[in-house]
Image (cartoon, rainbow, N blue to C red; front, side, top):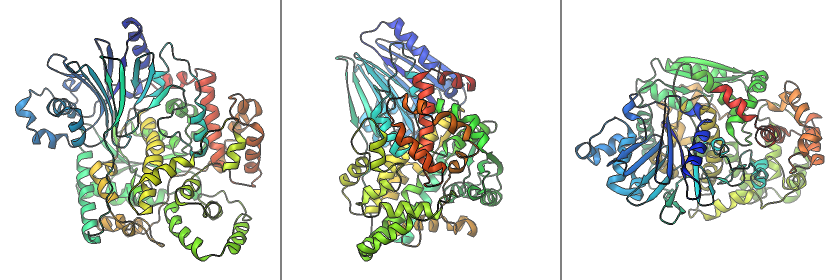
Length: 640
């Protein structure tokens, strides 16, 4: 796997751009410990780096070129079906291969098929850039599901792009300015959506898109090359569906286990990671497999006993990584320095700590992400079914009584407590489907958000509504799954999975997220996935034969950290340092009076506002490290 930094310039000199590129790469050492290489050609400079995973020889080092640098390729991550494509297109007979890598296959496929046809046949996680001198074009491509980041910055016909935001901050002329619209949406979602970033002028290339840059006239276009074609198949039987799901996943595991370095697996306490580990056992891959799990040292958050069951069953070499409030305090500045943006997913710091520990044993980790969203595993998905019944059969007068009663329940700071779920459910149940789904995940109410910000932008919930209303199939839960993929998976979960792991030079792979597997899963009717009493039905039934009963019968239980308690006691020093009038007002975005009200409500146990407090803390530290000072540099340099 590799990382890429390019500059395409028209109005600046080569020496200046060379210095810019060098500065940009100086903050990406954590992503490329094994090799680096720089080249310039015409008005293009590209610097490529490598974390050696496949073909550890220097034959794999990039960039790859064809016909004496007529076509130049730099590439990030992997094509999982490259061996099948190499055979199908008989590339061995046409080209003189110097490596066993997927990168060289990708280059020759481009020569054979050009860009559009190439993008239709390759599968999995990648971003890559091709400079075609004959066409005088540069292509900058991002994969189907945002597994690999790609950021770009345009200035005076000059275009820079990189795998990380912080490298773009090193360009000499660039002045860091906060993107208020991005921060506005962040305080609703915990993450920054779409092409927005926290810095003005820096954008993120959307998934399934590529940039086509025309060097003849110094212009570019962004083009979409992939959309999921969702067609629900109601003719296929339940048995046929579960068998096909099992076989597709087995094939995905085989492809994702292809590596020339040691591979390990994360092991959470719910079914998805269990399926990965059990499939590895079935395929005889689990012997000497290292598994890594997080143990939260807070009773209602501790699931280590289930992790032990799974690792013992699969006979893995198991590692337990304990997380305490002190670990959060010790790593919060480093974690924010590596995310580059405000980002408040509570499991990000544990992921950073786990990756740092796993680095001692493996170079690749398999991740569980995506099937929770796709197979209706969350309480918010079941809430949709309850919502239909509640609104249909409960008269309005009784709904008002229930609302008042629920909101009088005492605060319980345990993980996903009844009062927390009940208050969320009852508060937004009468909205339309996408808005209900949005508000069940939100941080602030509409009133609180308007009062908190000195600036105003269009409603964050409209992201959800626009996606929902554009989809042309009838099943609402499938639409919700698509929203979760487009918003939650891509703009939240993949940030954690990329930046926290690559901060420690670990490659994460996502066997659940392969294109064929995802497209098939979207074709499964929602009645096969969820009902009023059960979630992830087809998923559990498909893999029932390879999992212990005790795990099979468990309900979903996602990773949370007890920040609600810790911010009041164990992390109170951070709360006291940052939740001050001076710190909150210095960004000229937030209204201190409203922020103070929300803080006090939590500290005096009137309302559980920990999600807002955690988002606020992350934003204020990010502002201090990236806008007010350059201190992010110190924390990045400490780790590389």
